[in-house]
Image (cartoon, rainbow, N blue to C red; front, side):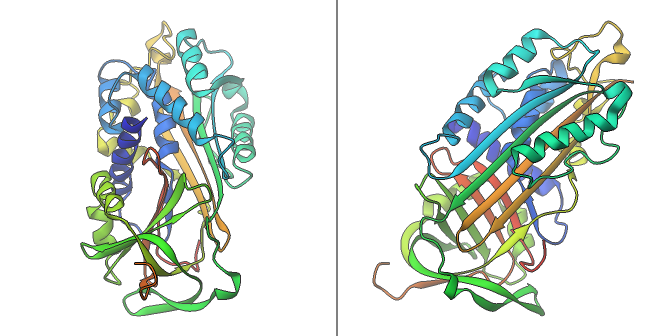
Length: 381
């Protein structure tokens, strides 16, 4: 599971950079994307499998990685944890298509991903609404319209879906009465007053390499949010470009218990539409999986007519993160659409998140990044 977490984090930063700098707030769940694509990789063969393994940074066989994903999912959803964490996987397959029993049995056994027959050929829009309804149910209605209109059609044969939902209270909630408006620099010369939370507690903290980082634990201590703030008001683009899984691990290893005055704006990242990941994944080296002529997913389905073979047409992703005095609510879903070929008592150090910053929701035991993103403007979604 530790190896799986390392692979997930390495892929997370590759994908995050691959999406480009962009503007505004952003949230993704690399764990959701990785899990959805791991189901596709489990049915890939030849060059398609090699490329997917390289991009996803997986070490080991598809079966071993799926088993590790299943064990990690079980650990994350341990009912004894004082947080809510749910993971759901499902395969939505064209009801007239024949899928390899070995594949569907393996994904069901390892990830609980049952196969649900739908009618893409004659009722693609109805199937899309069914998929989106399932995602809404699994994410407490936080992820809506994951698969956009036109995202599936009569040529679609299989949609692999992962949904993640998290609700966690801070180990020490921020006092409501301490929240007050404070200036936030959305740009070097532009400030906005935004509701900002305050707490003076013992947190794990580090200041080095032109950044500050503080770890805010959730109840139970098994999960936490790491907030990483560049020293420079306009330093977020450079920080995003330089961060890797290894550097994040180095930051977390450097954290030390310190009395900190944390100032953190309340924020909510809730994008109106899904984020298409296909272009970024192709650029990272997963080109064959998206090619009708090159993709080899014959371990999922191996029809006699080559024109009926599967390829990835698009990967849709959407994440929601809300942070307030009580804690954090987060949800994400990914759909891979496949078509046929056609210091104590000392004065506290100050962590003042008054300009753009990054956040990471992590499983502390494995180190896996479950959600990550940036807050460029807390007043905007």
